[in-house]
Length: 276
Ligand code: IPD
Ligand code: CA
Ligand code: CA
Ligand code: CA
Image (cartoon, rainbow, N blue to C red; front, side, top):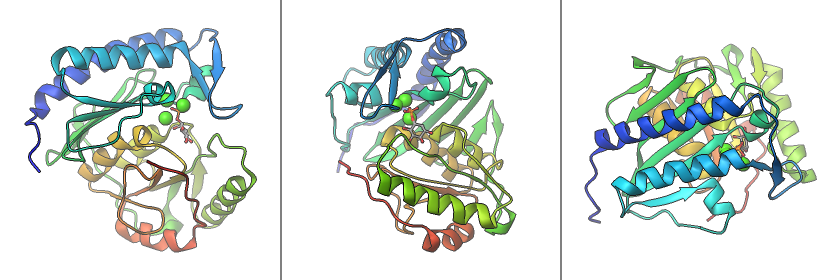
């Protein structure tokens, strides 16, 4: 299908500027006391910074691209539920790692993907506290602070450092699946990390510091940027049941190689969250 032509380099310039501005706001507040509200569960937090940063990003993009669409975490929570179509769509997580942000744990990222024709073509993940800026444009490689990055290429779980997350659901079935999978991974890998930010985990796979990351229950805004950044760094992104990755299905397995993904996924208990 025909879709609007988009200059990805202009888009990258704009989003680099906007996310650096937003990053200053996040960094200046991370060690301060926050006012917290909860969303879906008692540990699903939002702060005014999440909302303010999302607004700043969306308004900044709209000024230049009034016809583009947006899927943003806090807009979605406020009832603005856009579907992913072929139109240019910015998929935005203003603060990935809100629980870290609330606790002043210095691992928070802004994560922004731009999908065109239903496929992510541009991604930016920025940790403003550590000043690590990851980016990729389809076909042009992946970069951290302007240096090219590559996945580790690790092919076996027995050689891997693995990232997991525990999610924000209190559901018993979900918790037991997570526990089973983490236990399986911990039994075979070099080690397990839970950094509290999906975007961060994906970025670490892309730069070769993490060899595999799996999570079931996340959202498009957690994965959009990481998806393109890992692929451009030579890694693999698939559904945790070994199928083709679907941005809207709330599940991801990002890895340094297809071999390690194929070794791991048959041993995972599967959890299928509601989606679309
Ligand atoms: C969360 C983080 C966390 C992951 C959750 C996400 P948020 O995003 O990425 O690591 O386990 O699934 O919802 O709410 O901090 O943007
Ligand atoms: Ca959230
Ligand atoms: Ca998130
Ligand atoms: Ca968020």
